[in-house]
Length: 328
Image (cartoon, rainbow, N blue to C red):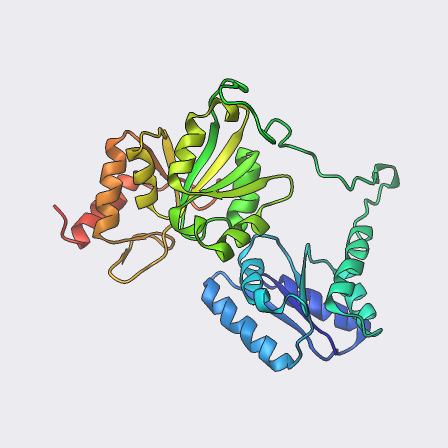
């Protein structure tokens, strides 16, 4: 029998599983995996792998709350070697789950059911005031001004300068907080991951492409290429969000002559030799030195995980880091 795994942030998936079983009764090979605030990506991955092992089946359909979030990214990592037997559908809701449970009784494959549940998921979304129900299956095309195809060198679009809506340092790069709250806050046409290492890693590049929210295109470019884009007037009509994995990449970008007014510091995951400065930011001596150099370029550092957070005092963070790391 095909397995169905629900995955979400918080207890959402667990709740929908319980609701579905109120309708269908107890179900075999039907599980939920949830990401709690106290958990990291590796904790979620371990729980996910345990559930997959318990199912003891190759054919699995994953129904996930949010494209680009940690549950989606971790499931995507495990999908690579099982693409012929497994499928992912995002936008988890109860009609979708009911449809999946119904269809698997027919012995259909994960790929076949994945196609069928989309219609049920959409049809389950209705407004009570019937006159407000208008079918709109097309996502607004926000990238119509972005250069497409071959545009002659020297062509000037817009004002000839790419608009950097947000430049952010985040170890996880493009994930749920970025794909939802930050994207809605700054409204970019493009999300660009600027990283030499990620640009050479086909799997990570693919994950970035898949994590882009609806209506926004994503790209991965090496640092030198982003500097070329900054200088190319053909990108003048583009509003972009830049994502850097670490401050060293930002410094390299600035040393190439790029200009940034402000960097949003979202997260820096703990690594050996680091000290924890907040629940999201850890640094070592090299990081501190790097940020000092970034500040010398006149760049302001805004420390926030999401737009609604109050910005933390970066000067105090640096003072604490230097004290604990014995840096003069």
